[in-house]
Length: 143
Image (cartoon, rainbow, N blue to C red; front, top):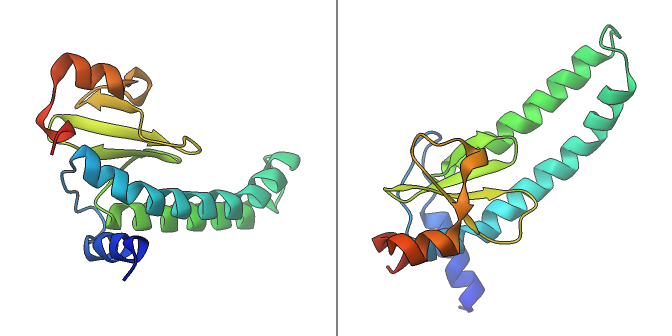
């Protein structure tokens, strides 16, 4: 079994029920990130044409209803998939990995986990991860 197959098997083994979050160390979150990125890219690509059509129509256009239904179906599917990984969805394409102290934050199309926010803080207040690790030396960063 190759390293990537082993990693995929570990991530698949970690799938849970929607809404059932888990706590992640930084290394665990980094292992799950490639799966999250794939799911999010696929959903974002699927959603793109619907967003374009919706913005080209007037709000009162009767064609908006079916487009909005498709939009909602795609987003709900993505949310369910992300939650099954034990993650917290905080907005469209915004995800938090619970560490026990707060959340490692990721937003599509970021390339890596680079931000952290404490519980109760808004996503916009996230801090650079390197700064949090240097200042706080949290246990989850070294497991």
